[in-house]
Length: 153
Ligand code: ZN
Image (tube, rainbow, N blue to C red):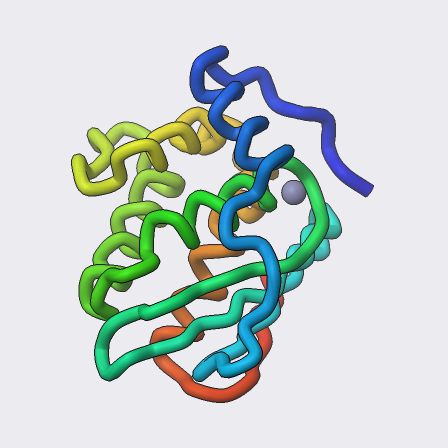
């Protein structure tokens, strides 16, 4: 079951739909250092994120999954945003993204760039977990090698 699409600002809606229809970094990594899958039972969104670290750098990242446009577009844009970054930089982005989703009165951090497209989702509390799922999964992958799972509740 997926919720109807929320009424977001047109430009941002286009960006989200573009990533939903043409996801970046979609697939699996055979040599992944960490594999984390995540599930949002509220909406039925599922994703798996594969990460390949080279020391402290995210050398490669890919995802598979299905669910609403917000969950899948957020996964696609997350992988784009963190590929090639250090774990510390990626963790800072996770924090900035989650702050934007939970505190809509605060001006989003500039480092978020296009990820600001999801700011409008914060107005729809029931959809916030759709947007943050990929980031919670990434956060767990940054902390732990091997396979693990994130379940939103
Ligand atoms: Zn969803």
